[in-house]
Image (tube, rainbow, N blue to C red; front, side, top):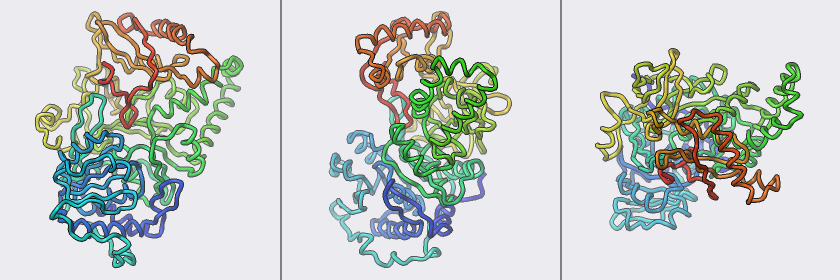
Amino acid sequence: MIDEKLIPHLVGAIQEYWDLPAFTNYPGTSIPYAEVGRRMMWLHHIFELAGIQKGSKIALVGKNCSNWALTWVSTLCYGAAIVPILANFSYEDTQHIVNHSDAELLFVSKDKYDTLDPDTMRKLKHIFILDDMQLVFSRGDKAVALPTYSESTQFHALKPNDIKGNDACDNDDLAAIIYTSGTTGFSKGVMLPHRSLLANLIVARENLLFNVGVNVLSFLPLAHAYACSFDLLYPFTRGNHLNFLDRIPAPKLLLAALQDLKPQVVLTVPLLIEKIYKKQLQPTLESPKMKVMLKVPLLNKVILKKIHDKLMTAFGGNIRELITGGAPMNAEVESFMKKIKFPFTIGYGMTECGPLISYANWQIHRFESSGKQVKYIKVKVNSPQPDKVPGELMIQGEQLFQGYYKYDEATKDVLKDGWLYTGDIGTVDKDGFVYIRGRSKNVILGPSGENIYPELVEQKLNNMPYVGESLILERDRQLHALVYPDFESLDHEHIPESQIPELMEENRQALNKLLADFSRIVKLHIINEPFQKTPTQKIKRYLYS
């Protein structure tokens, strides 16, 4: 049991870091924690006038920005439940989620609002535009007077002790309903209680140790549990300066922002790191001259140290740790990062745990693991030999969700006897380090019943020349590969499009030499558009089966 509560951490942060910068729509001007507190108390006044109660649902749709974070913090501190909706959901999905969640208020970006039909979202009382927090819609008899912040001068001079939260909220009260955007295509509302967010906050507080006031670059979608807990909740309670980018940037833009902000910790997804490795490091490492130099022991150390220093500088020069999660990491990239001793680690989680399940500091992180089970979490493997024979991972702990909102059947499918059946296949060693092999729904049976994990085959294929990304599928009881070529590299080397099939066939043959007989690829198919992905950059496999 946790003997703390979540809301005092948020309110306490505003009071303690009153004069420090809190939010910036990068690269714009910042607002201090004081202004966040004053605007939060104004929003609480608005909520009260609108008849919002403890446990009422407030939907939030838009890209990362200061007002997104303000709405999220204000909703939690009021005791209502936030319903963050991914900005890239279609308007049909957005309207469905607003209705399904029983949301009474909606905060939405102007561009997204223009695609919506308020009349179809029947339970909404009011709609506000995130860009400027203006009221744009009220339903019939719900049209009470809701003053703007500029009109609400009574909040403009509030002092730290005037900032309040709802003291009546308990750890089992509902904090958020997060609608997943998974690789299987089904969106379910994950009900996260206060204790889930609080447990994640405590784990972050005990492991990440950000300095007060440092910059945080927030570019992963905050509507996703991973970014929300570690790019917003924890940094906010640490007095950090949160700089919001409204999209996941290309590597070049990301590195430019890192140079400017010089953050201590960066949260990202494997795909971005793999792109940086493939574009900026791999060509140098594979040059004939460099291959020879790396075989000389003393010279090898000097070169790897220079690469380490160059990469540290590229990330701003202040990096304590680069944390990736949300998708598998390419083994070759991970191995190289460990070789140069870059402060890099991999975690594992899922929305149903708010999200963290396992993590280990880069200095103790074990190769190909996804970290060590964290505080409050128990991980069990449904296998006769949990450390050797892969089985389904089962989770128990304070972080566990309450179920899927209004979806009892789906809840019963995954919550059994107090354990969450994750659908992920892996092992756990004697020290609690978790090793993910793949999703149970993705496992392909070989001709003699062998388990083939397509994610592991894809890792090898993605290392091949001119492969941008790939997907392994079973067709007619044989393995096929879909490949989106690295067109940028092909253009850079002036390789004509007509030569791509020949190059990819060479890759297929080279790949098969690395694979067991039962997991070899019989045919490779070239696609001309990038795969559609989830917010954590996992391919939506169901679209290609």
